[in-house]
Image 1 (cartoon, one colour):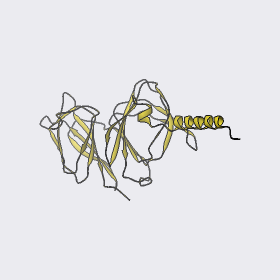
Image 2 (tube, one colour; image 1 turned 45 degrees about the vertical axis):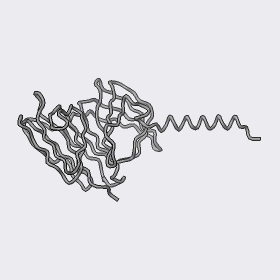
Image 3 (cartoon, rainbow, N blue to C red; image 1 turned 180 degrees about the horizontal axis):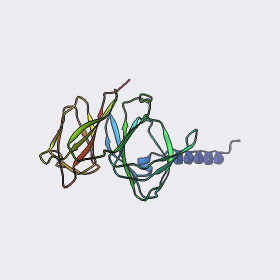
Image 4 (cartoon, rainbow, N blue to C red; image 1 turned 180 degrees about the vertical axis):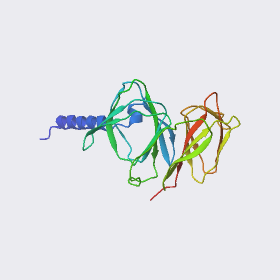
Length: 233
């Protein structure tokens, strides 16, 4: 005879293991992960790890991802519990830097080893298949924000990254592109719509949409523009 109660206990136990090992971070840790933009091309998740904060096991999509760092932060330890377990310590990050990851399914715990919070964005590229980026790329923070400029920081067939700095009180124009864009502001700045972009704000620009920005206060206007190619097969 099959012991029904024993079977039910095994199902419940197995279910609890699955839940504890494969949690959606936004659901499991809403104070640490929040979706700020989601459409057919990207999902942008805002991430916050408090000083010395620890998070339990959760996972992330395997999509190629651009990490955009919003503040100067210390090291963070990721303990991966995947098929081949390993521990990775992310080095300190600087405000304005970014990293492009080729993508992989991640399942890990998190421990912020620093004395300050770590705040950054995960820009997950939904339409770029896994394996299209041959290797990771690190874009450093700018050495100076003393003059207006638009510089190309990264380019391949799937994504282009521009850095825009504006010190001119009369404003600077970000011209429309044939590609849609994710705009990430590192400093407060003014634009026509919305009137003020706060530091850390995220905005989607359609292909025909441009942007005029001016510094707000004493700091230059500083943003990253991520232009995304159409769906790739």
